[in-house]
Length: 248
Image: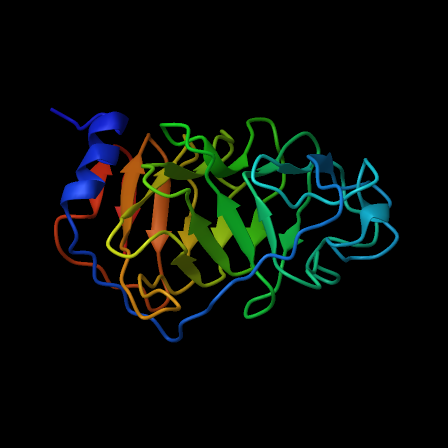
């Protein structure tokens, strides 16, 4: 019987054996904005900087535990591979969503300021990076990522592509780590129905800035295909496959 999402989340409390090859350890500190809120990146932003409120649909940039940063407009000048969305300082959001006529966006820069995906304490895999069905362009998240959860909570995070067209893929190329407490595992589910070459190529590490260990536990769920490339090497029982294709 395939494990359910709840059983997988529960299992992360009891198992730790994920081995991650890490080229470096990165610590992400998000600087709060004055009036953070969920917002959509504008079709004609002033520049490429995430942390500039003038680039978003409301008078603030997304940077709070419950915020969703949405990219749903075609690119005019800023946001693509030539002028990627850049962060002048780290930010925290609950969700990073690509929808509508988005992209092709490149969010962040490898080795630059990072994005902390902040859990709210809700069960399940509701805190996520997601390409919604209907998007026609591939997306890249290049910023370093960190998963963070409130104390004494078990929260799952999803990296998901629901586009039917296999040519429209999601690539996560930044380093990945966790800010959860020492000895608490972080459940990350690679999801979606997209059968293209979706990739996680950023180095995944479970070593905390304070020297402790809090494993990132990977799960493959759904019919989609995901490739773990770059320097990522895994072993042990903390990596599970629940449908679709998963390659290393």
